[in-house]
Length: 161
Image (cartoon, rainbow, N blue to C red; front, top):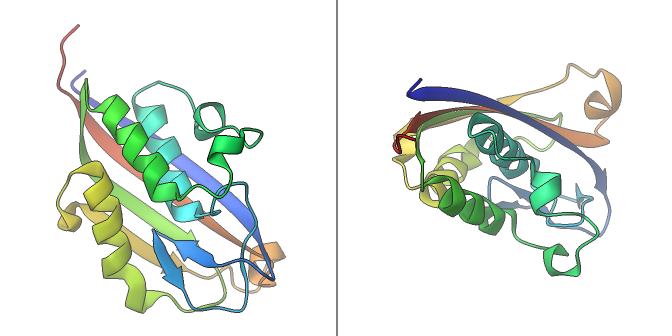
Protein backbone atom coordinates (compact mmCIF):
# COMPACT_ATOMS: atom_id res chain seq x y z
CA UNK A 1 0.00 0.00 0.00
CA UNK A 2 1.71 3.20 -1.08
CA UNK A 3 -0.68 5.50 0.85
CA UNK A 4 -1.49 5.54 4.55
CA UNK A 5 -3.89 7.67 6.63
CA UNK A 6 -3.44 8.78 10.23
CA UNK A 7 -5.71 10.58 12.67
CA UNK A 8 -4.72 12.66 15.69
CA UNK A 9 -6.57 14.35 18.52
CA UNK A 10 -5.55 16.54 21.43
CA UNK A 11 -7.25 18.64 24.08
CA UNK A 12 -5.83 20.93 26.77
CA UNK A 13 -7.35 23.11 29.50
CA UNK A 14 -7.20 26.88 29.21
CA UNK A 15 -5.47 28.56 32.17
CA UNK A 16 -4.31 32.01 33.21
CA UNK A 17 -0.62 32.86 32.93
CA UNK A 18 0.22 30.93 29.75
CA UNK A 19 0.58 32.09 26.16
CA UNK A 20 -1.97 30.68 23.72
CA UNK A 21 -0.08 28.95 20.91
CA UNK A 22 -2.04 27.27 18.12
CA UNK A 23 -0.54 26.06 14.87
CA UNK A 24 2.74 27.63 15.94
CA UNK A 25 1.14 31.09 16.17
CA UNK A 26 0.99 32.99 19.46
CA UNK A 27 -2.58 34.29 19.70
CA UNK A 28 -3.39 37.35 21.83
CA UNK A 29 -5.80 36.00 24.47
CA UNK A 30 -6.28 36.17 28.23
CA UNK A 31 -5.54 32.45 28.70
CA UNK A 32 -3.24 29.80 27.28
CA UNK A 33 -3.20 26.02 27.10
CA UNK A 34 -1.89 24.04 30.04
CA UNK A 35 0.73 21.53 29.02
CA UNK A 36 4.25 20.28 29.57
CA UNK A 37 5.25 21.79 26.21
CA UNK A 38 3.64 24.95 24.83
CA UNK A 39 0.32 23.02 24.76
CA UNK A 40 -0.29 23.59 21.04
CA UNK A 41 -3.20 21.18 20.47
CA UNK A 42 -3.25 21.85 16.71
CA UNK A 43 0.35 20.77 16.22
CA UNK A 44 0.02 17.91 18.72
CA UNK A 45 -2.91 16.49 16.75
CA UNK A 46 -0.85 16.70 13.54
CA UNK A 47 2.09 14.98 15.27
CA UNK A 48 -0.07 12.08 16.41
CA UNK A 49 -1.72 11.78 12.99
CA UNK A 50 1.68 11.54 11.28
CA UNK A 51 3.00 9.05 13.80
CA UNK A 52 -0.15 6.95 13.43
CA UNK A 53 -0.03 7.00 9.63
CA UNK A 54 3.56 5.76 9.76
CA UNK A 55 2.82 3.25 12.56
CA UNK A 56 5.62 4.63 14.72
CA UNK A 57 4.25 5.56 18.12
CA UNK A 58 2.55 8.58 19.63
CA UNK A 59 3.64 12.00 20.80
CA UNK A 60 3.55 11.02 24.49
CA UNK A 61 6.08 8.25 23.92
CA UNK A 62 8.48 10.36 21.86
CA UNK A 63 8.09 13.51 23.99
CA UNK A 64 7.07 12.38 27.49
CA UNK A 65 5.62 14.95 29.86
CA UNK A 66 8.09 13.75 32.48
CA UNK A 67 11.20 14.69 30.47
CA UNK A 68 12.91 17.94 31.43
CA UNK A 69 14.19 18.47 27.84
CA UNK A 70 10.60 18.72 26.57
CA UNK A 71 9.47 21.20 29.25
CA UNK A 72 7.98 24.26 27.51
CA UNK A 73 9.13 22.88 24.12
CA UNK A 74 7.81 24.67 21.05
CA UNK A 75 5.48 22.13 19.43
CA UNK A 76 6.53 23.06 15.89
CA UNK A 77 10.01 21.84 16.88
CA UNK A 78 8.42 18.51 17.87
CA UNK A 79 6.69 18.36 14.50
CA UNK A 80 9.99 19.05 12.74
CA UNK A 81 11.68 16.22 14.64
CA UNK A 82 8.83 13.84 13.81
CA UNK A 83 8.88 14.86 10.16
CA UNK A 84 12.62 14.30 9.99
CA UNK A 85 12.07 10.81 11.39
CA UNK A 86 9.26 9.81 9.02
CA UNK A 87 10.69 11.35 5.86
CA UNK A 88 13.15 8.47 5.59
CA UNK A 89 10.24 6.35 4.37
CA UNK A 90 7.24 8.63 3.83
CA UNK A 91 6.21 11.89 2.16
CA UNK A 92 3.36 13.95 3.59
CA UNK A 93 0.67 14.42 0.94
CA UNK A 94 -1.85 16.59 2.81
CA UNK A 95 -3.07 17.54 6.28
CA UNK A 96 -6.62 18.40 7.33
CA UNK A 97 -7.16 20.03 10.75
CA UNK A 98 -10.16 20.98 12.88
CA UNK A 99 -9.51 23.31 15.82
CA UNK A 100 -12.45 23.36 18.22
CA UNK A 101 -12.95 26.27 20.62
CA UNK A 102 -15.48 28.92 21.59
CA UNK A 103 -13.01 31.78 21.98
CA UNK A 104 -10.94 33.40 20.64
CA UNK A 105 -11.96 33.76 17.03
CA UNK A 106 -9.10 32.35 14.97
CA UNK A 107 -9.93 32.90 11.29
CA UNK A 108 -7.31 35.60 10.80
CA UNK A 109 -4.56 33.14 11.84
CA UNK A 110 -5.54 30.34 9.43
CA UNK A 111 -2.93 31.08 6.76
CA UNK A 112 -0.08 31.50 9.27
CA UNK A 113 -0.97 28.22 10.97
CA UNK A 114 -1.10 26.41 7.62
CA UNK A 115 2.24 27.93 6.57
CA UNK A 116 3.90 26.95 9.86
CA UNK A 117 2.70 23.35 9.68
CA UNK A 118 3.49 23.08 5.97
CA UNK A 119 6.99 24.39 6.58
CA UNK A 120 7.66 21.83 9.30
CA UNK A 121 6.40 19.05 7.00
CA UNK A 122 8.09 20.36 3.84
CA UNK A 123 4.85 20.63 1.86
CA UNK A 124 3.00 23.45 0.17
CA UNK A 125 0.73 25.51 2.49
CA UNK A 126 -2.09 24.76 0.02
CA UNK A 127 -1.85 21.13 1.13
CA UNK A 128 -2.72 22.06 4.73
CA UNK A 129 -6.35 22.79 5.57
CA UNK A 130 -7.05 24.50 8.90
CA UNK A 131 -10.68 24.84 9.94
CA UNK A 132 -12.26 26.27 13.09
CA UNK A 133 -15.37 25.03 14.85
CA UNK A 134 -17.17 25.92 18.03
CA UNK A 135 -18.60 23.36 20.42
CA UNK A 136 -21.99 25.11 20.49
CA UNK A 137 -21.63 25.89 24.20
CA UNK A 138 -21.44 22.20 25.14
CA UNK A 139 -19.00 20.67 27.63
CA UNK A 140 -15.67 22.08 28.75
CA UNK A 141 -14.83 23.32 25.26
CA UNK A 142 -18.18 25.08 24.96
CA UNK A 143 -17.71 26.62 28.41
CA UNK A 144 -14.39 28.12 27.28
CA UNK A 145 -12.36 25.87 29.59
CA UNK A 146 -10.49 23.93 26.89
CA UNK A 147 -9.46 23.85 23.24
CA UNK A 148 -9.22 20.66 21.16
CA UNK A 149 -7.95 19.76 17.71
CA UNK A 150 -8.32 16.86 15.29
CA UNK A 151 -6.03 16.14 12.36
CA UNK A 152 -6.09 13.69 9.49
CA UNK A 153 -3.02 13.17 7.32
CA UNK A 154 -2.27 11.29 4.15
CA UNK A 155 1.26 10.05 3.63
CA UNK A 156 2.83 8.20 0.72
CA UNK A 157 5.42 5.51 1.27
CA UNK A 158 8.62 6.45 -0.54
CA UNK A 159 10.83 3.62 0.68
CA UNK A 160 9.99 0.13 -0.49
CA UNK A 161 10.89 -2.50 2.08
